[in-house]
Image (cartoon, rainbow, N blue to C red; front, side):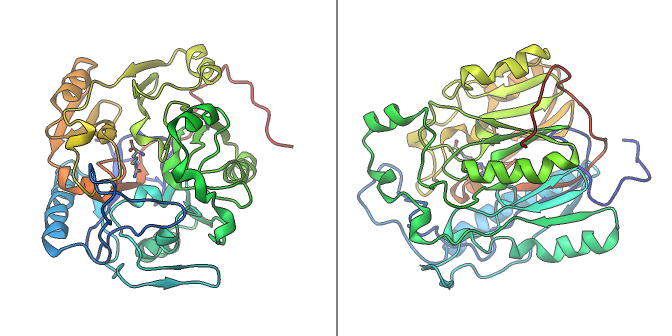
Length: 381
Ligand code: ARG
């Protein structure tokens, strides 16, 4: 790959440009996610049983760490500089003026917390108590990038209180029928009172940023992103997948692979009125094949769905990394002209993510482009 000499230390405008530097998460110090108003972790298939608390067992950490190290090694063979978060102890309780929680979580999924938008790093507000301080493992790196290059900017989104009033507690008890009835209202476990978003609800496509309204991103959060990003020339598009009753993080639902091509989740179609943006500019939406594991076969403590299968990581517009056992998806991607690299990653699933979730891109070649020339966009006034 040709080195672009004068690329800022932080530079990533989309999900697919040639990758140069990446943060890969770490399971060191991880704890089980606690029950809290924004989260009801359950053991798979054993809903009534109490979910474990406190530190993850050393063997579970070691198994995940081995696969994360494997991803880091693969990236290095591809000429990518790999950085890792600081290992912290996430098993200690946390107390702020507004809430207490028995322990924190982990640094496996930097994608959820941190996002690079061009030459700017944004730290998300986060939506769950156990993840309130999850920017901490990345702060040393952020300071380093910020000190290294004066073109790098750094924005921290306003922290919500995460007090009881920020949540809709009965959300977890709604019967399925009620969820169906409310699916177009996009009301989930967080209310609209405070600005709330996780970084992983965003997807970058040059000038255009998609933001999924979800259990982890509310409309106030999207308004904050609009007002923050529009003056910098971005266009922010809220997107919805009404059949996903527990939406969180867009990268198992709607995954841009290269200009003109998006991998979609057949169980979670995009809301009808949001399709024209893609169709009008000639983008193809292509459905991911059925994952190799069923939901019942996912790891016991994993709170994500079988669609972690489609959580791929792009190295360039024609090279992508896929989980080692997801053969049907690998075949589809090869047939679309991608070179497909694979790594084992299933032991990372119980930390909530796969290859895209467990990474945060710092530098990709390329500049901001307009991939949606037909969009007519009304910035917020
Ligand atoms: N909610 C998604 C699913 O279960 C998982 C998203 C994981 N993404 C992430 N960035 N942690 O399908």
